[in-house]
Amino acid sequence: MKPNTSANAFTNSLDDYLNHGKMPSETEMHDPEVADLLALGKKLSEIDFDAKAYKAQAREEVFAASAASDSATNWQKRWFIKGAIAAAAVSLFVGVMFSPPAIAGEWMGKIIKTLSLGYIEIQQVEPQLEGENISVPYELQGKIFDEHGNALTQMSVSTQKVYTADGEEIEEYRDGVIITKQDAERDLNEIGMTTIHDAAKLNDHTNFEVKVPAYLPEGYQFERAEQYNNDDGLPAPEYINLYYRNTQGQELKLFQREASEETAYGLSTESRVEEIEINGQPAALIGNSSIDWQSDGVLYSLAADKTGQSLNKEELIKIAESIK
Image 1 (spheres, rainbow, N blue to C red):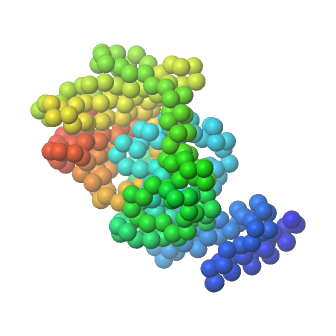
Image 2 (tube, rainbow, N blue to C red):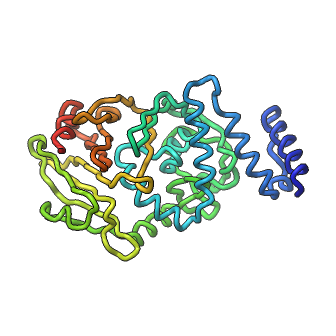
Image 3 (tube, one colour):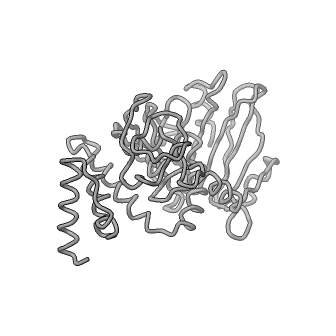
């Protein structure tokens, strides 16, 4: 389709959608230029330009669109290395873990606060109401179904599971790619994991000095560390995850990664985000149960188990400040 023809088709289709709720025809959607323009136009139309956070929201939409050009294979591996760590505290904000609440937050949640901590960016978004319905995002229409095989046009903010046309349960959606639960498990297995049970060997395969808490609440002790494997099957030296467990079985997670463009991550949460300091460095306290910060070229994420008698805010900060 010629450029002026595509532009005219895009303008007419977007007007029909915004003013009358009319979806573009199959012919229009077969033109990739029109499809891409419509997707971007729809997202821009949803931005509240009166809100102070609109610039950040627009930037994330553009980032997500450009990231979608990566191959699915490269994206999947990069996400599992980066995202599996970040998801311990809250869900990723540029394409989150695919559940209806998360996907609803991706398209509906208005940004309330943004904290930038070097290579970490954290957003607090407006909470969604349980049972609230939203229209299925344009790019997912005809691609997600309920358990009975019915195409979804409305999505509820609930724990409802969603499926592909073939009935495979969908695990996540990010940057235009739908990943089924089976695909996610296979890709994670392909990446592989090295488990370390001896705390004296934490620095054997890292590019940075692994630091451990000098203070732990009563009953907690080191259980294991995990490192994602690289293409050679060896522990990736940029990442390490530490796990502590108490006598009641509650877990405390401390994720560390070398600070770089490659390991940078963003988080989005409906929980309250509070800016604090950890040993003089800016940090984000998320919902009194996790802390993220950057110090001496390392990114840290400390997350407490929310089950049972969870650690309080003061204890969590005390643990974080003992990591020197």
